[in-house]
Length: 208
Image (cartoon, rainbow, N blue to C red; front, side):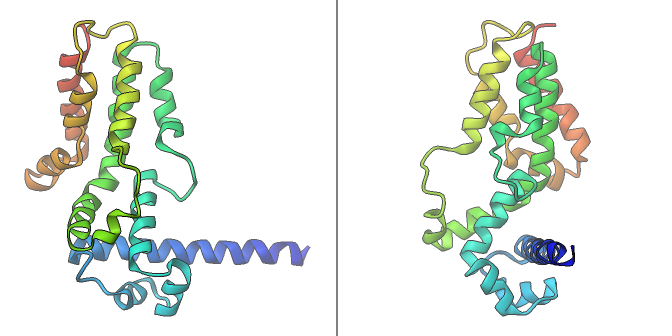
């Protein structure tokens, strides 16, 4: 019995260490920038030795890569956004209005996590081209998700049949940049942004 528990405890400890390092890295990258943040600072903030950071992630680039991936997903499970419960629930909605409500709510939760990191990543890629090579797929994954959501929404009762650019509207209104303009620059709460985005998109994409 005790031997069965040991691997679980070890795995839990490793997962907690990884989580603390990622959390510390995220906070420091957003506050100081990727380039200005040293691995020793991340280790100190996480309460681990810097050798542990190297052992778990290898280097700062790989740490950033995993941080971005986990931030988008909300956890470290290998489940794509297209297969996440909140996204599948939106696709399964019976009407365009309900689909849009669920999709905007789910996307707002993602934006709360992701928007601050997008600026970090943009600057990091501009200063270190090797970082961009860690995401070799030339397609925009956010647009892939948006296109899937838009195609499903526009095929449902209550969608405006004349709208041909639904994916573009979703992509623009629910962008990290626009989210930051309202919540960071103008002081809106995430909930207020969600209400505004839903009202704006519903007027464009759904019938009365």
